[in-house]
Image (cartoon, rainbow, N blue to C red):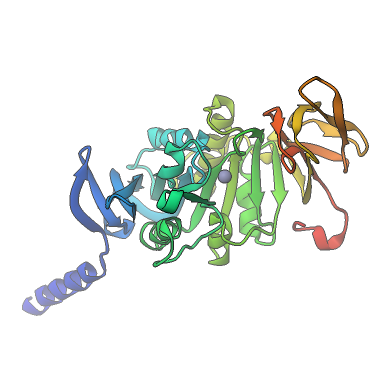
Length: 364
Ligand SMILES: [Zn+2]
């Protein structure tokens, strides 16, 4: 009896030693501040709200990321959701809120973690980039520097903290939610690394308008996860600085489908890529302004275009035509520049298409 008790005590001690939730002792608006999340260390069958302590700033304070955690009653997959890595890309915030509004931890198998605004500096500045005020200021694209650096600039430190202390061990499936940039527009669109069959399956559980089979881009959240063999997609939800209810609803259906497919939640699959008749391409091309001027884009997102079709005109302030632009490929309009004021190099029209070359099967 004594031996059994001692064993239980030792075992409990060992488990405690592994437990890795770190509470700083602070509270913000009543929510506990954490500097490390370990979902295995939380009580099952509950939903938690935390403020995750991120990088410090020039006035000696921290940036915080609100985090929701649903720990299911029984163990299972660990789904990670993140919004606003780019600060002006906000539809994903509402998607994550709705995922948690609909969750019932008593019937959830596994855990769901949602980070509601990974880049607070960009969110406050209406800008995609991480804002660094030092020496007059500079900005960092916060989706090109993952997994960050412990001793890097503030953006790199924020990525390092999120990667190591929020996501490591707490996600084995990941959806990073974006939109197009300010002045441009996507439909509901997914970048997915089709070389990984789990990623392909994950992407096609979403009733998106378009999917790009894509080898990924170094330094993005999605590619950083995929390199660690954790299936991840970049979900592009329409336009920046807006809530778009129809695209939010379809994103929610996709996340729920993912959970049903993984056995995390009971129920049937909703609409997937099959029902949505999602256009899946393996290459894209961008038609960009060759000079500054006011652009009139003649096509809409989702339109089919043929090579040679006129897709945009650019005028000077008096209305004289400066340039006309034609489609460089036959395919679907994936994105447009919807802000008429276009500098040289600015996006006018992006076309998603299918390159028949075998080497492009999983994305070029
Ligand atoms: Zn983005």
